[in-house]
Length: 248
Image (tube, rainbow, N blue to C red; front, side, top):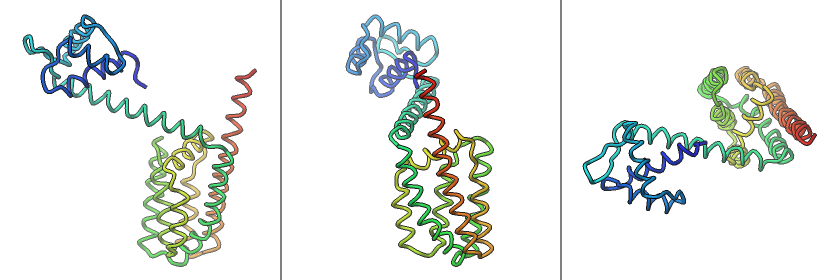
């Protein structure tokens, strides 16, 4: 989240960048008022002088200020930080909007469909499909070991199994269930909170598919989804425990 100072700096740099001519203190003051960040013309002048001293802006005589290359870099940094902050707020709002019952209902539906997808994949998957699954599993393990987000690999892994099943109806069904773009990041956040690792689960699923063992593939997928259900229950236990402590 941008601090108050960073937010004001961001707005000023943005105004200067978007202006077709150099920006003076009067123009800056009017623009900031319109953005619900009112400052006097004198204060606007001090803000511009501060940016000059940092080398973020350059004064063109009496015309006003323009961004320097350093100022353009700083603006990009603040834009990225602001975007990450918004994404983080959206994510946690999404997490708060999910109830334990909703997540478990979704996972139960996934268990019913994906156990069959895994079974069919063990029958129908080609060498290229299996190679793709191993590549995704490896990438997910490496990403997780570096403490980076592995949500995208999780989506790709389950999608690869669904494609390999050869059943377009089940593929469409699981895609519809997983269509909430925030669902996978929410589950990943829960797994990290409870210190759960799923790369091993995925490896067991691929092994069974590679060995052409439909029953073991189905069992490995069911075990994987049930581990996720257990993680959700464990996470909510932690949340409820923290809430009770705060009340006391």
